[in-house]
Length: 294
Image 1 (cartoon, rainbow, N blue to C red):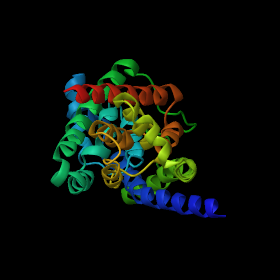
Image 2 (tube, rainbow, N blue to C red; image 1 turned 180 degrees about the vertical axis):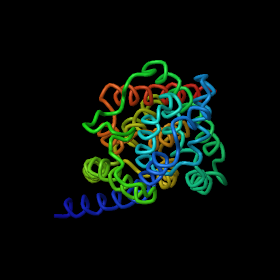
Image 3 (tube, rainbow, N blue to C red; image 1 turned 30 degrees about the vertical axis):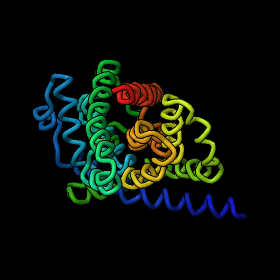
Image 4 (tube, rainbow, N blue to C red; image 1 turned 135 degrees about the horizontal axis):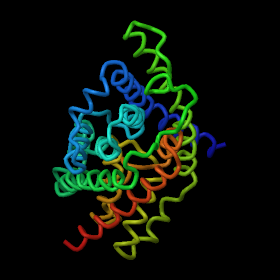
């Protein structure tokens, strides 16, 4: 019964912590669909892949904090024909460099370990930029969003109302319903992992830098903390793990975890999601190893 109680508490915590940001993301995606034309976006986004990804990182600064919340926005941008590299860079950068997360990271580390704050900020931009460019090269103009039956508009839902405010409300509800079921499944699995995974198992991987980095990357993926709160958990791990391991933990958690893996799979095709996850793990591991010898 204690296990069931703990799973229930953690599930509710993860779900309701993510839900407001998911609602905000759905609302923003609906505003983009209703008020921003394809032509406007085409004029604003640089054609060059590097500059386009930089623009995506800049856009990420203003998007919602939660890693799940940026997925409805990213899907809507792709439906608006925004290049893949721009969308991916924005989606990965947002949960790390938006003001709310920067502030929480600052409070957790700046006074005692300011280099961790700066590494998370700067490497978050670098990783998002590099992965965005690579994903843009791999997928280019390919269709990566899951198909739907109704193609009356770019968001897969017909516009029956001439009132734009009603359209925004309607699309917000549709987008939220589309992703919330995947959030629930991801939150359930994450709560089971948090309850059943012994924390002391991480200490077995602390014999080498590479193993400790991999261990904390997997730990971040499995426990699925929101990027506004993972800094304080990371700070508590400093006594047992190296700084480079903590940096890897702080980079990967906001970019990919169990709960947003399911949300991604509900919105994008499997090849796109698996490629994205592989790149996130690989690039962050490489970057962490470079930092460890710097």
